[in-house]
Length: 92
Image (cartoon, rainbow, N blue to C red; front, side):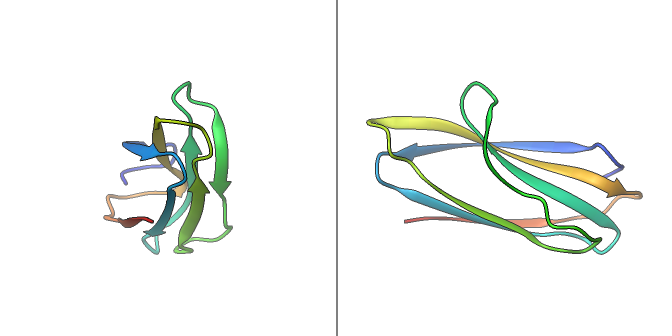
């Protein structure tokens, strides 16, 4: 993260019946929000915990047939300075 409004996107493919869980460790200088988007960019679920350094997590289960393309969007809601974060993605 570099500044307020900075957004990082990640692409994930998920097959029918599978669940993805995401946990992002947010640096102490930032309040970040995590969004799960469909292929059109619409928000399906989100994690918007308040407070700098508060981790964000979410889970989503694909119910449609076939494989779908989704996007994770981690947004720096507030904060400044360059800081690293770590996201763990688990599929089950």
